Image 1 (tube, one colour):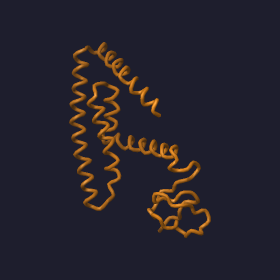
Image 2 (cartoon, rainbow, N blue to C red):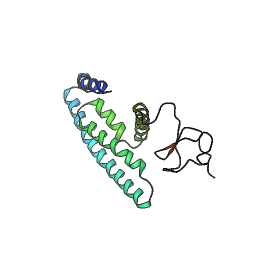
Image 3 (cartoon, rainbow, N blue to C red):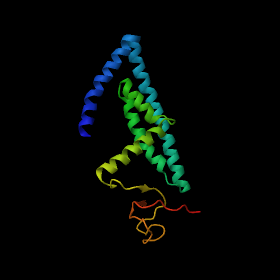
Length: 170
């Protein structure tokens, strides 16, 4: 993983320069410069607006007693998107816009969650071959149906690990 990050950090500036030169040869040097500056200014404005919205949604969730899961998950995407929008270049601007725009951020959130899930499994937090059934937070209590229920597994992080999925409550 570290080698991939180093390769990307070395390759990204080369790609950015290539794209800037290509755009510059197509539309001219000054329009390219103006486009880069305009995208950075619009990106700064957009990050500020979306940051205020996220802060407002976080305060509202806390005030109503609802867990602010989505609002807290959006924070790193907004921060990273803002940094990428301020870096001159078209590739970083496209990725930054995907992370900042409210209609593309849910996709980025799902991809980020899937990546973190795979990473946790690879690091051994969740053993291979174990099924995770998200559900009610049970803490250190026995799984629904008691400890003698066939197929019941240990409780980790408030989720039932292994065995059969819990019966729906109703």
